[in-house]
Amino acid sequence: MKSRLHAHIGTIRQLEILLAVHDKGGINEAAKALFLSQPTVSIQMKKLAEAVGDPIYRFTNRKLVFTETGLEMVKTAVEVLDSFARLDMSLGKMRQGQSGTLRIAVVTTSKYFIPHLLGPFCEQYPDIDIQLNVGNREQTIERLKQGIDDFYVFSHPPVDSDSDSIELLQNPLVAIAHQAHPLAQQKQVSLKQLCQAPFLIREKGSGTRHAIEAFFKEHDLNPNVKMTIESNEAIKHCVMAKLGISILSAHTLTYGGQNDLIRLPIKELPINAKWFFVWSKSKRQTVIAQQFLEHIQSNGRQLLEQELQRNGIES
Figure 1: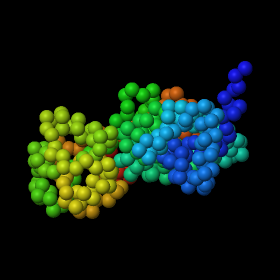
Figure 2: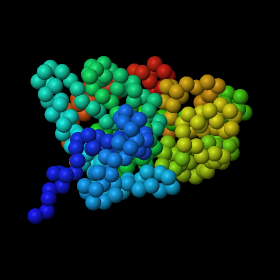
Figure 3: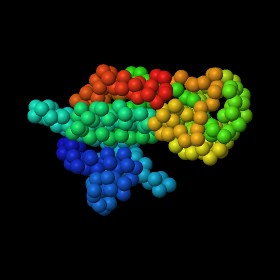
Figure 4: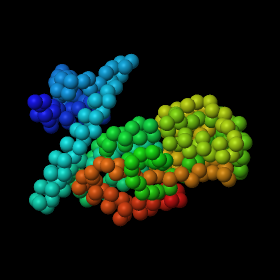
């Protein structure tokens, strides 16, 4: 008779180590996050691989990459640990307390306003833990497919995923330049002039780039791309260094600072994108996740809109 997998697959602690290795992207990083030694983490991962009879990860160009078996284990580990979190929450509610872990994955640009959404919630539930993962669009979509997190934030939710979503707030994309740039001296700038100037753009896979490319395609124009950059902050500093102009989310300027930067007066802008709050239909929500969703729907969006209006962005 074939033995049951759960009888020898390992302990809850091993599953926690598995998730740490996946989320941190390496053995050393996971060991530091868990305050364990690197050999301890390696041994536990080896035991898990032996238990399932397949490698959990491989190294490709010195980068740790999870196998299909490993990714399936990560998905199950999240479900198992969430089950214990639900039990913890249920027992906590019986003791009139609130605890648990809220896991959120967001695309890079939304990292500027998400803390303003989490702040009031954490004040209401001070004993909860937050795990916030920040990545580009493709990385966040992959996490959604694996069902790792409770919620995801996109400017363009994937249409082929088994998920639900609600609109969170507006995400206006504006053209920016250094205040000494020749275009910054004009009262009105045309799209043709914008396309002639050296242009800085986000990497492929970025939601901001997706919106910008669709915008230029709609107007049958192509920007003069000088640099492709994987960070909003790096783009801002390159614009400050007079290396070119760009189009970024207004939230990047509102929360990230805008020293020496101005918005170019272009009548076709801003690009009217939106932020969406997304969750997997197939993943059972934890108690704390349900409470956070209620927070978003009841007053979270209103708090964000008020914050944006105070900083000069219409929502």
